[in-house]
Length: 187
Length: 165
Image (cartoon, rainbow over all chains, first blue to last red):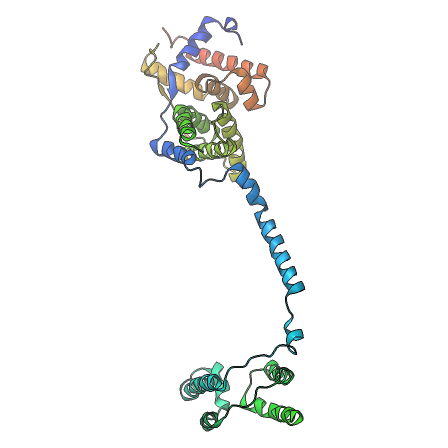
């Protein structure tokens, strides 16, 4: 618009408007605005944002590739059972751990079974059995290592027991003949 | 970003922030909203421009866009705050009228329709050309110049006989 279009009154109004100016920006807002442009490393640039958008997809793709690779090339435990010997804890370690468990079981039998119904499982355990078991552990001697096939069969029996529920002395007793049978067959 | 570019941005903010905030106040309904919208606009422009700050007019466009989204998103339709036309006397200029007249002028400015007030703000205090205002408002330059003229005529009509005596 040319100023020639304006009459003097309009020019006067324009001049009067120009005699006003915007109020000062509050100092705290100025501070915030300056902080925005003073922190280049903290704020993501546009190119960084573009990358960030693809990061989850890239991570997911990498994870799928890793898992696929592992599945493809990693040795399968069942296949290797026959070729590589499995290791069991030594008898001394087994004794230590068993004694620890016996101590915990005794504590349950003594103190907690009456207080908490969820621990009633331990009511079926007799304290004398636990003591006998502890005594027999001391007498146990080291035997020759089991071969992997035998170990696998034993593991299957144990898993069968566990899958039928929490093992008790009763379930172990039922399972015992099959374990003995396996021992006999091996001999 | 190096120090010189950072200082350039800071100077750019200090020079222009008052008029941006004035416009942001007009476009929003409260002081808090105005400040939030201005901060978001500066942040967005800073992220888009690698080195040199853009033309100050870009901030007006960013404010307008964000203020519209802000109002839509939050369903804010409350009464506009009274001090949205936050203007004060420019001490560097000789005052062609008294303080009472200044109050009258401010009151008259508040009676302008939003589109006209926006045009006057961007033209007088934003220092933009009609073409730049047209780009921001997505209107033709003729519409903008007509709005400006109508706004001044309305102010003149309201203040006739009181100003510039």
